[in-house]
Amino acid sequence: MNPEELRSFLRDDFPLVDAHPDVAGLFRHPRVLAALGPALADPFRSGRVTVVLAPEARGPVLGALVAQHLACGLMLARKEGRNHPGADQRTSGGVGWHGATEVFQSRSFDLVPSDRVLLVDDWITTGSSIRALCGIVEKAGADVVGASVIVDKSTGATRDELAVRALVRFADISGVTEPRR
Image (tube, rainbow, N blue to C red; front, side, top):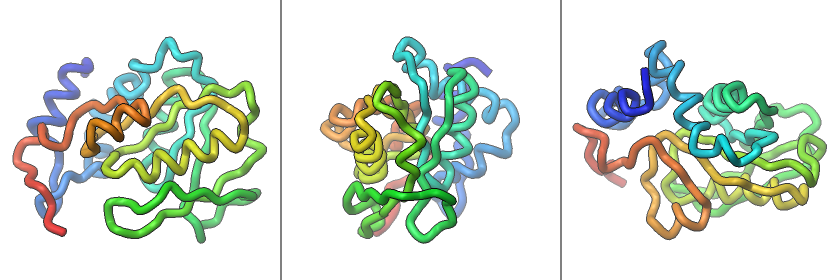
């Protein structure tokens, strides 16, 4: 599946559960799964990425696909309270789309100042998770090269601030209406 076929699939056939986009459902489609790594990695191919940093829950699946495609390492950020052996730092990016603050834990020894880090997640709305990941990278003295996501539901200001590249915008996913809050 080439990048345009993937975008077309995401716009026209994004799996839905209770009228909400089902990112986990994408993983059930072998051709989509095979195309996600290259599609998320390609905008950053020239960025000399050394590490992909991906937050729980679906980020690690996508991060592994991207890291494999870029031939670089993978670092995980687990949500607070989850088992993450060696985790020695916690970082919050602010209030998320659900109105709560997410705190991520990570291992400070997984990054070095010379690292060039690509942040990979399934979705961006408020940018709180991506900001938390930026905090992890900044604490290590490393550089963020940008963020790559499947679905962008953020504002232009958030997109620009965090150097986000997305495969599709939320508004482009056919059949999906704005979730009620």
